[in-house]
Amino acid sequence: MPKIKSRSDSMEDVKQARLAAAHSFRKGDRVRHQVTQKLGVFQELNLGFALPEVWVQFDSVREIAVTLSCNPLDLERVNLSNQEPEIQLDHELASVKNQLVAVEVLSELTETEAAERHRLEQKVERAFYEAALALRELHERKLYRSTHSRFDHYCRDRFGFSQQNADLLIRAAGVIDNLKITTIGCNFLPTNERQVRPLTKLEPNEQRQVWQQAIEAAGNRVPSGRVVKDIVVQLKQKELFPIAHFCQVGDAFTLMRLEGCERKYNGYPGVATKLKDFTIEVEVFDGTMAVKPENLRPIDDPDVCRQLPATIRRIGRLRQVGLLDRGAQAVLQHLGRQTYLTDLEVELLTFLEQRYGVCDPAADAS
Image 1 (cartoon, rainbow, N blue to C red):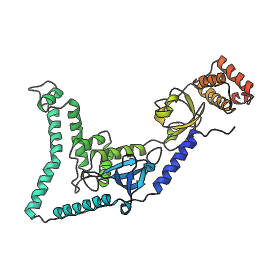
Image 2 (image 1 turned 45 degrees about the horizontal axis):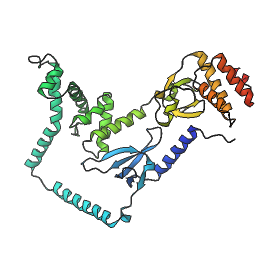
Image 3 (image 1 turned 30 degrees about the horizontal axis):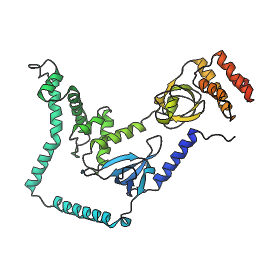
Image 4 (image 1 turned 45 degrees about the vertical axis):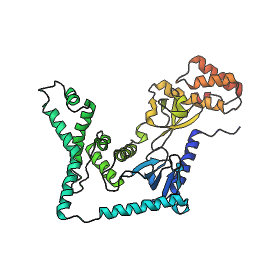
């Protein structure tokens, strides 16, 4: 009988389909997300995930557009010239509105007005930073000790926020101190805690790198917290250590924390058969699948590591026979869940091999 297509082949098909869809767009193309119906502008291919995605700058009612990573198969190109008259009219009105706004922005200011605008803008931008610095100093100097024995009680009573909020603000002050190193002459510093939160768990160099990228992604403006978070996620995907440092082909594992349709394999043993950039192809008793390192718990028992690959191969050969009795299927399902086989289980497997006339398992034992 024909061999059933493995999960790795299916994953490769999906990957190629996504790549083909992504390459059908060009940077600057107007696109619509077919699920959310949001409009945006195609940016570039994103290979930071197991399956290819693309970066799209979606329209927003806010000043800062939202750049998100999404499945290219969910996108369709939008041609404004082919849209309904009402929709095209809406875009024309929006264009006129933007031109009016541009005229207002470009109206001349006197030198005094320009200086005053700059001074006020700096006060707005620094308000969050000044608050974070003040809170950090209150904590470090214990200036709350005359009325409160604990800093969290002081923050709750005096400012109305929790210890967690206070900790976030204090960490934010340190992040902004670090960002000031690279924002000399740029004047773009975070204006709220949401923009800083994704940076607090990064190293100083990474904080500066991500912030600069976020400014560029936001069109040389102060980025939103979502833009910063997306770039942090992208950075973490790129920083995954080489799979070869995690395991080698032939290593045995127990699968764990799988989700979706693969949840049924949690607790099953598997053997690494192929190492990819960010995933490992693992063979289980009824096929193969690509999983991330965090979904694998290494098996250190030498006897298990020696027996398991041969057991999986033997079960696989039996499953290729085709029409198996339901009792045989139940036995193979049970054996496929075991990290090692007892003497009786080995006898059962041998009996099934003899019953269905598959290869002599002695070759695997040698």
